[in-house]
Length: 332
Ligand SMILES: [Mg+2]
Figure 1: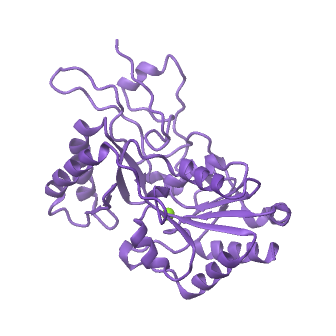
Figure 2: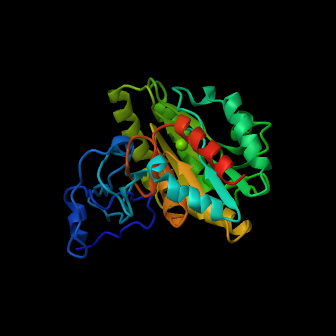
């Protein structure tokens, strides 16, 4: 019997603990798979890994295609995070001792609350002033890393002077994303999805040039089901070039060559002072790779779900602002 290869990326296979029935049992002899744990807040938006059934009795595709189903349970490297302000004495000591703080923060859901329409989001004045002060601080190197395109991110944070990295760190002021083979596949996927998703209420596709985002916030269950089926079907033949990534009420389609957010922040960190203390704050599934990549630093998940690769959690963007104010105070 042909066995299934396990995917390498956490985004493609965020949950080793919830195999689909049947085919994935083929790998269970090599490594015991854990059953899902209890429901875990926001990560119910995340995925299970499921191999698509073979079509027409032909050769089976070994790739686990399109993990788009809601899921729960613990994923690789996750544990129960601690409330950051409860551990403040220890965090404060580390901040004070650090020669430089490399501060990375996500945007939507982290610095600003998520809005029903992503284009309504703006960084409020108080947040702008705080970020502008942090940017000027000689011991802080501040980055905003987002799934948004750089130009979009710039519009929403404009005038603050913070370093920006769009498309999960792939797009920067000083570096455009490299040409990748997956872009042609992405164009095909965009064209087919535009046709297939037309008329589905509450579902809209955002073409970000190097990635696609299919938003379903506010869509009814039936529309979400149909959109998921369409996405699965469109991406099946393109799976060698594209991979799906899940976010909060959004499916992203990304060229396989595009590296994770974790890899991107490691690169950004390496460009700065090597003895910096990394701080990473994020709220979504894509932030988990960054939490893992910077696990020796201060990593903070935002939201009510405490099962994360981050060491700490905060409850809301409001608490993130308090944290940033505290950072400013501690290292002044
Ligand atoms: Mg976010």
